[in-house]
Image 1 (cartoon, rainbow, N blue to C red):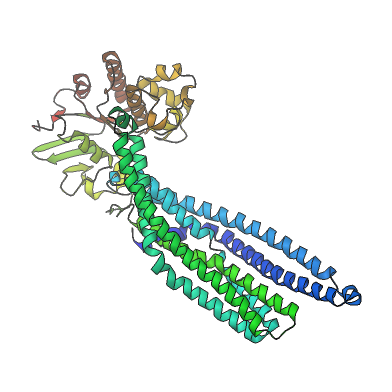
Image 2: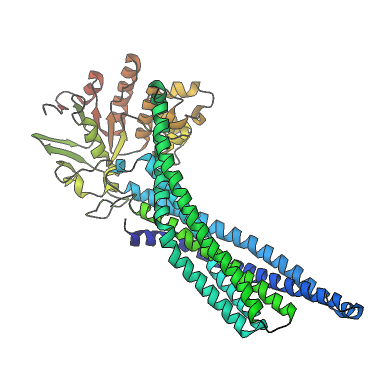
Length: 538
């Protein structure tokens, strides 16, 4: 995925929220204008009141404090209300836009031929952490119009003291913007990249180690894993202070600029003391308004690092020869022509595959299912078109896979079954569970279809996970069923019942099946002469 693709994806996701971002920008500008006016007016009011008090009773009685105090209250209310509205609209728009970005990036992963190339840990860290950096950037979008508004009102109030004070403030504001843009790549770019990559590696490792926690405990690997994580944590701890130092230097420039601006107002002002104080505090308010924009620029280093990582997440999608369509005709034939093996099976027919471990049985099913790249010379054709030439969506639409290692969601039984086809009725779910010989087990559970299966199905036995995966494949409604060691983890009686149920279901639905198994009872499902051995290619 190129930067242009990423920019287009972001633009499409942000599009529906542009109105909300505009409202957030207007509210941020209103809050900033109110804040600068409030600061300047308060300084003028306090100074004027003090001078009136020093001038004696008549001067104090003649000082009009009602209008300024009312204005101060009004500006305080406007600032608070506008800031709340800006946060509400800005954060909501950012969250909605990035929810769409996450969904589109996930679709991008699925469009790649070899989805196994993106590990779970890597996908999680990038879809959460890196997009989180983009969220921070979007939330700060209203800072730009707010900075312009704050600068404009600050310059106008400074002009009341003297044109020279206004020009001095303008020069300082321009200098601070230039400072932020020049200092950010020098001070933050390298540290931001190192920090993002170190944090991503650490999170990916944590996800992967969490998935392997039973093995880690069983083989007493926790001390070694702890040392490995300590090394990765040290890399992160090394990058974070460098980034923090860079941010501190940029912030120090802002603080210094604010002090210089206030001093310049005092030096160049030719107005009365209250107006001079107004200009001093207005200049401070204008610098403060600029700080949000400057911090957004400095955080741009993190955004650039996140975009760079997101660009490479999905790689290049499979190049379709023709556009995939939802109404494509069901696949009628599968042909294998490679390494001396020439087999053609028609819709509704059955094929068994056997062979020693490592002979490529699972790889063959994964290639058919579209989760492993077919390659130009794989020798597998679907409806007389080479698998490698078909869009991955068309390939996946033809097959329902029950893999050897069943992957389950951390949800309920119903959640996992409806992955196959959302919206299926409970009646359909129970029917599939009956075929998979799992209905009795589920009915015995306290919550039935609403039973929580745990992280990755941890609360189910290996055989239950396998049969739940088979039931899910049955519900997909695809023309071909792919079964990889369907009886793994089952006792002989359950294995026999499952084979019988599947045989009846295949006859009833006319679904074709390619089954990989070492068990004679499942290879007998396909009939004599319909089994190939990947070792000798019979």
